[in-house]
Length: 103
Image 1 (cartoon, rainbow, N blue to C red):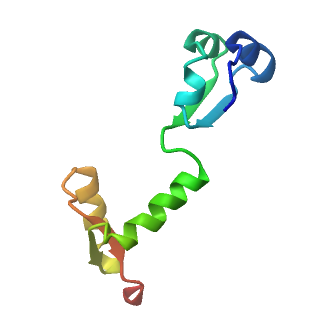
Image 2 (cartoon, one colour):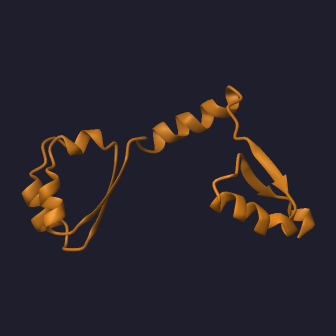
């Protein structure tokens, strides 16, 4: 854990104006960081609540072991434009997977 972070120090000395900051396990940092100090320097702050590599690996291992699989629709290469139109129209119900044998 990072411990208490002085958000004014963080934004003034560590992050440059218009800089980028990405953080995993958001809950451990945001309790101590005031958004004003990040916004004041126009820092692009990105965060994830899913954790780091160990937590991601746990999910990756868990899913196939418990048959948690994505729903897919296999399409031919010629159907890509139709599939993309469904995505844009928010009518796609599954993930599209292109059959590479049809390219």
